[in-house]
Image (cartoon, rainbow, N blue to C red; front, top):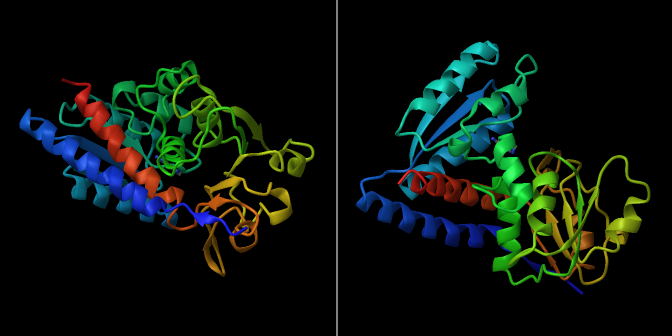
Length: 285
Ligand code: GUN
């Protein structure tokens, strides 16, 4: 079997067109959704991501304010900036790009963003609401993965989903999303991590396998069940260019559907971030 490719770029374009229509409808009520992005330091990958997010805002008609800070910025200064953005009525969403420099306490910064302006859904309040099944906004990458599965016609309910990776950005919130009772979820979710014994034993049972490991080609063909759906969240810069966490060429001969890297999950993260900003702007009405 050769897997069909799940075209994240095309599905993200659909969502971005919907967001643009929603932004135009809000404009008729006198509201222009706005996102403030905060980028600290000079991590090259973060610069690329944030530039892409800012450009996408512009294309959707969302205002964006760019805050680029030196890597050496004192934590207090960063917290004061967030406080100003929290109090600015024109700013509906705030995004602090991760990772932050080592001298800055990441959780303290994420805690400082007002939950109702938390475009990434990283605040513990939003994390908790997601777990409880009534999210205000869900983190963009997990929400993008769920939407990608739904819009590409992959049945989720009742399926065995195995997530490899337990990060706060992807693995944990995605598990919370897909285990909920309700449409586009209701899966049996297993989360594997560095402490997992017999990783392949778990992944081979997956109907839907989600690789969020951060290591190039870590998921090999023998780890994948025939006919399963593989979602690759990896973005690894290697000598061969940008590659995912799955060994794409080999895995696509076993799976029934697979997301490419690039062009799979990445564009969905951007689209869902924009959708989150619109949701937050709408909630102020
Ligand atoms: N770093 C890696 N992924 C993300 C993301 O989705 N949002 C933010 N803010 N930082 C990230």
